[in-house]
Length: 514
Image (cartoon, rainbow, N blue to C red; front, side, top):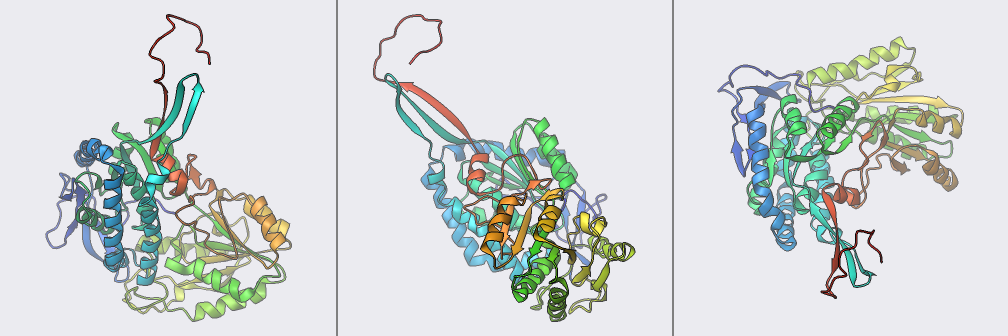
């Protein structure tokens, strides 16, 4: 995952130029230009040019967004579950009918191919659909006559204003992991999207207005660290949901918790694929290419390390090379297989790991710097890169690269492979490829990772389960969506009631007895 507080490739000072449109905030049901004159550059990564600018919030803009959400909360909280559900159903239908529009926006600012953008929206839509049935998950519990004439029952109620800080790599899906459940549960939302691809969030705000969501229930605060810190510190913001790099996730967790907020902060990853000798190598090769190079490797669930149990490495590498040779790299609007990276700075950083690999003695089997894209030469291109015999001491192995770089590490046994995975600081996702059910069952028990795939390379759980890793991949104890998401965005009340006997027993300072 990546930080959402970087401001690379932005011009954060000076007046807004008249030649380019400025992506605004979305506050209280309308576009909101804000009071700040700071703006950031928004690129089309396939062209390498600035196509628009985005407003960067100041403290007054933070106050306006949180103020709108605060004002909207009482009425939305008190609206019946049936009417809240009706809004969510309408939003779901509009999103399904018009997701092609949103995919085009994502591709124009992120660079991923249109089919991948549509896939991202579909996975986010699963959480919207989960939220349309949230009334079932908001039910409390009831125990009758726990003491003579006394009943005890619980209620789940919303928190209030909740903040969502999302990364550039999934400008639609990651926010949808959080805001559908938060809104359906009766909260109001302030979303801070990445400044690299900010337009999807405003489009979602417009769609919510069309679906009948009251003004102020869903707000978008554009910006950089000023906006982030404003949400972390504002006393009216009750919780923070974050996805990004591990250093920023830790900062978000510590800062928000210090200010008394509930926090779920999902951090970085270094996902491994363990390949046993009995695996179907054609399936493995397809999976490694799909999971390693889809969305140019800019996925927190991308496979970045293939751990090959010998003697399969050579045969597997040959198959992966064949598949890489057949990929088309280019503009995501041209039916290519893989698009550019999100910014020039990020492309250059990812490419630098190839030199690190060579210096550390690894074998660069396919060098993505030799790419010939089907697109503008000024785009932020880097082709699929395959590196064999990567030392586990190399930064290529230890660091989250977040790009189309697939490393191969050779091991002698299953036990060595599992030990290697468990020794890593991250515990986000992992996969095993094998035809041995016993080995797969043993793996899922022994590996210290939060999300596991068995012959599935990107084990992202469906919306009814929760998303999140272990170790340095998750700060806080609550994962995204599913049952844990419902608990995160609600707070429980326990009510003890006696109705049967209006009399009382007089004053008694002893402990209550049954």
